[in-house]
Image (cartoon, one colour):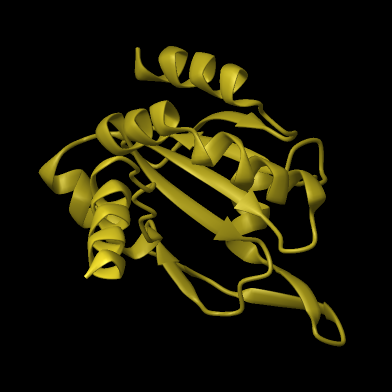
Amino acid sequence: MKKLAIIIFFLGITSTGFSQIQNRTFEAIDSLQQIQKRKIIVFIHTDWCQFCQHMKNTTFKNQEIIQKLNSDFYFVGLNAEEKRNIKFNNHIFKFQPTGNQVGVHELALQLGTMNNQIVYPVLCVLNDKNEIIFQYNNYLSPKDFKQLLEKMKE
């Protein structure tokens, strides 16, 4: 009985006290924009990038950031090495192999290239017409990311 009470207690904490980012798909963005226009925050990352992983484990675990992202923006996490085709903005983007089992996704290149190169992590902000209005390629601390979200909300 004691174990059951402890399990219920922890389930209650995790379901009410902590929320997660609503990670949308590019395919869903068009439908969502029809319901409510919002800016889109795209986090372009890889599994091997230390700064990407650090941002996932700090910035994107911050409850204040999660709340702001979920209420004011559409958030899309894009693994730059994603192998599936992605339909977005009436175009199909594909994985482009660069070697044996390595490559980069066309959509990551389209949204994340700055000065003719892509450096991870990349944060790309799109307006409700899917136009790039901001790009940044470096780790953002929770404090800096909160400031960015405030500016982007305007």
